[in-house]
Image (cartoon, rainbow, N blue to C red):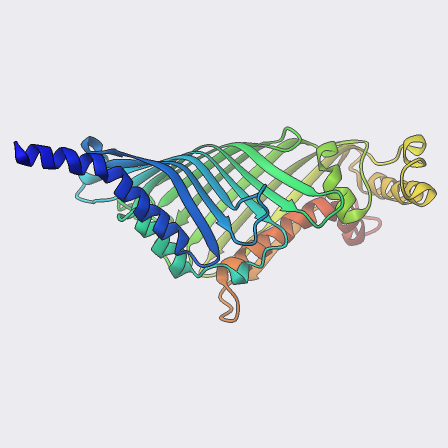
Length: 346
């Protein structure tokens, strides 16, 4: 009877003990503060559930914390256990990640610090990751107007991360992702990856179709001092990272573009100069548009080696991708015109 009573007391106290432990580990990540609101323990399935995890950089504005997760379910993956491997699976509901353009990734906590924190939250190797209804936002708060690009309704499934299946593949794990972008675009990505290497190898293909360019006017205003009146953009990308070497491309297609509305723009800040600039951009668009498809297309290469010992590999990786995709929005017209060989058809 005393033993049963002791077990009941321990069971009742366990969520509070785990909560204090998790909060302590979150606050040990350099440059961050964090906490969770509640913890539920499910002993019968070897799991615990974190409710409302907050992780904030000490420099983050209150409205845009680095990470918020409504619910995180961490448990034993029983199917892998039958294969003789003790690994875990994680399900994240409604996570939100905010990435600020001004962040210096080289000043982020080291890989070891992040690994230590993740292992503290999930003591066993993660083999399966599921994300439901996530959001990823890229913000530049120093631009006028503020740039806010985001992907909503993200669904991500990552399988065989610990290579439990023991597949004879160079890239044994698979990640699939879907979501909705600002402007109603439809995102789809598939990636094969080997996460067991210090610098993971990966092969990724991605498409973003049907984004309304009007939704990107804050980006155009802040970066190119122009906006559009009409248009859509599709973006296709494929790249590989093998032994630290990145290779690939970003290919944007712009259709039904209109950048000039004289009556509207003459009244805006910039007046006549603004109209002239947009008229010139409109001529560029006309010059590079394929007359059959009425689409503006260009190819922006992705190249880089992330093994430079003077910089963070993760910082280099993100920097190369960021530059490539920003360039896809910002310079797709001018690059096409500049690289076009006169007299040759596409």
